[in-house]
Image (cartoon, rainbow over all chains, first blue to last red; front, side, top):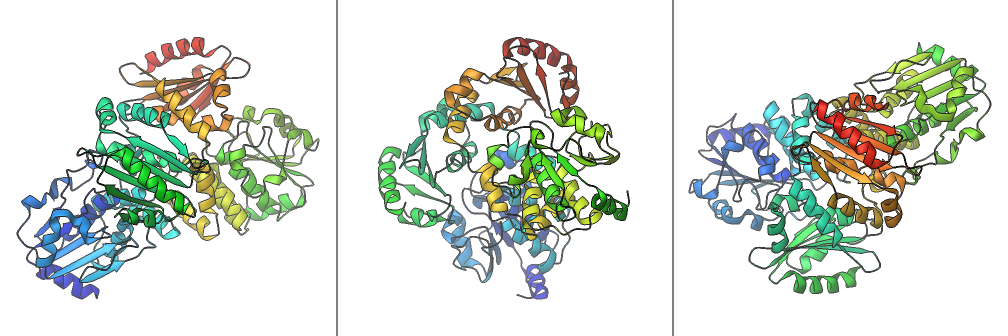
Length: 319
Length: 319
């Protein structure tokens, strides 16, 4: 879509929604806030929607007070931006809004994205959706990026690149980050909240989980199990469990890292990380999930022990 | 010094040495290798000297085979580059070479550097010495940066910025990193060796150390003690102990993180990390050490328990 037509579409829309996927991560949150704040410069009718409770770790971000639950949303929006959402099913309750919209703009970097939008801006080579939003705001919306927007977008980029360590980091990523820093991104605050402000209980929990980590298949698989009992015993928050699997992945010789988390209903949320030759997106697909080649997940309708047996059988075939 | 004069000085020097400080870190190693490889394009008489055993983690770096021990060095060099060395005392055995040299070029980013060189290129605002070497090679030596040099320099920059997370990261840092990536820095290999290839024993050791971590002064101090007995029991390498203190620093409410490591001779190497208002460079100075405002260290000629008491007394005065 041409920039002029896009801007006209935004100005003419009576109600606009920007929607995050369920279980939102830093890139999802950074992109809906960053784009949401930018769109508010063009229109008075922009809602930023998130089904989940806003993760406390990101409470420092500008624009947080604009975020609404789908229950507070309008019955319909004529223009909807869906961000960082590889699969429309990940929209949760907001999926109904898509059918009613006149236009859906789908901006994403997940390779699994099936172009469900009316307009699709997809680039699986981009580090993050925030990197795409950075260009989208400057080039397509022809708007400036202020300090608040820069802070949101930098947060998404650093989140999805593991602070510029993962192989999705490119010179374009680093230059976008440099520019966002110049535009006023609060990088000290971002680093503090994302990386240097862990709760004591999460550190004690880390020690306990690593102590029980299982090393399987001659060291090629590392597996951790996170039970509801342990979560309660250590009083750790949901969002504090995210990075644990990386400790498994980052061990010499480990090819597949597995985290089994018991949900409150007794089912198991499994996460996979791959290092080189195993495509964990394929692995997750077997269990009805998905993601990227090196990071994926699925939910199994059974307890962690039962899920573990099934998963290890599947891994044995692929490793 | 003008670029032409510098290049002439290098071409006319009969023997050139590039020297690292003792206990070399990623920035120190990246800078001596990066500059060493560049100087070899201008002169056939360049030695890269390192007193310590080369840390295995950095064995993947290009140019490693050029590194010599001071015992393999010449009796004198007419031109010496000292890199990343805040204090000439940190040169170890190589300090004698400085007196005999016609010229010493001191390139560093430590604020404590007292300009001990004949020529001094000091910038405490630079993220790393490698960031300074990047400009020095392109602008002062007027040389290109090839893939090998780019890999060395990127390694130093990512090491000293905690992968672009610390507040020494600037837009200049990120743009230098972007450029080095374009010039062929092997960033996937760097990330793998620096961040994603931990030994299993180091992960088990992490769990054990965090389990025994002490939280003091109402949560404002976190302290770990690493004994020789524990190092031997877990078979961890020296270089695997480096990042442990960061787990202490990164806890909510912790202002000063302390790591007490028992040396083989029974003395204690103490490391400090500060978060906001305590200047840990001052703290280390009290014990005859030094460093940066937020990262410093010292060696105490006593066991860890005795050292701990002294240190906590001092921290109580400053906190």
